[in-house]
Image (cartoon, rainbow, N blue to C red; front, side, top):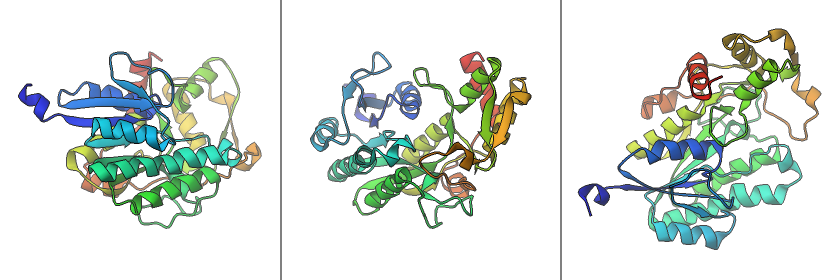
Length: 304
């Protein structure tokens, strides 16, 4: 065994087939001082040559065995039931994954003294008075949001070493994921499709690689607690879409603005939201890209 093997950090990525999971895997597989194990609910992993175990985190015994066998220093929980509207009707599934699954992870993490990094959302707030700091009082509007707040609360009393990273409007590239918001806008406008975009939801969209950067900063600095992770610019979804269209030189006349209530979605959305990231910037050294910088990176990677 070489000296490098003795000091390798063992990192378990849960939900490794999702967009955040994939980008985290790509980041950590390139590091020599990391031993990586990945897990997700699907039968197969999207990447080859990386250790993968199929697992449903709502199954306590399954996930406990994986964690005990691997004995990770860090667990990155990128698994979640994220369909906001479907959560209103599929409540049992949403609760099992978003709350019970997190309880199972934190229970095993506490016993092994592993550090659990959990991804949360600005949806825990009602969107009446955003943007929000880590100290603002949550008031979730829908069932998905309630499960995410419940998972945060379960971690606070779990006795495990943990970090909660709240984020919002995640976008970016992943090789094997469905198109994110940016690619959907670009593909739609290039196909000359009319798109309707809400102009009353305000956020600071988060570039996926900035969130991966934040996760790694937490690991490097061994920071615990709650941190807001978001982009450097606050704007409406409509203005975000115009920015994308401008950058890719697409026809903005195909974009029409609407109000959220016109969509008649089952779950209510926070409108004036977004996350203040001053704490992450000062304590972690978090430095988000500008939107234009991220679009340049996406254009180069995807060949858009």
